[in-house]
Amino acid sequence: MQAAAETLADAFANDPVWSWAFPGNDGLQVWWRFWIAGAVPQGWVRMTEAAGAVSVWIPPGGHECAPEDEAHVEPLVRSLVGARADVVFETLDRFDANHPREVPHYYLSLLGTATGHRGKGLGMALLGEDLSRIDRDHAPAFLESSNPANLERYESVGFAPLGEFTLPEGNVIVTTMWRPPA
Image (cartoon, rainbow, N blue to C red):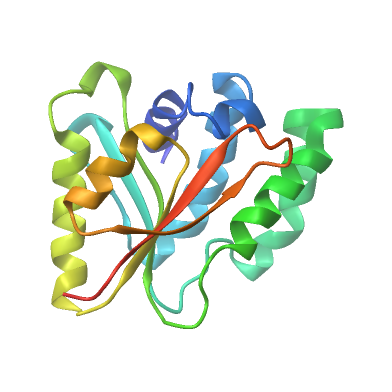
């Protein structure tokens, strides 16, 4: 779990949303470790050798945050970002408000490749393996792309833009994407 958190912190260190919300690699590691811990029991945290790339999926009927862990989110955010906590909570609320609920689906919560492993196709290969498993279930998939540079990559594996929203300060656009069942 620690290796996955380190990879994701590195992968999102310059991300337009997450580097803004949680400046500094240490805060991001703590944040991602919390979410990974909640996803592991659901069986969809996957990584390549040496945690070069990591994916965190929430399966249909699953939960991004276990009910017993929900009470820990607020104190964790406040400890990591202090006075900026309210604007970070508003950001998290926007993610939640733009998440479709009508159709059961797999949710790609996180996908990241460590800086030293980028450009080798590890992240896209991992995503391809994940999508093959999902295709066997004939299920749709959803994600939010916080980095416009990744939109073409997601489109190349069947995701299409669904909508978008901005951060509370209006400076970053997040694109929601949907992939129909295969």
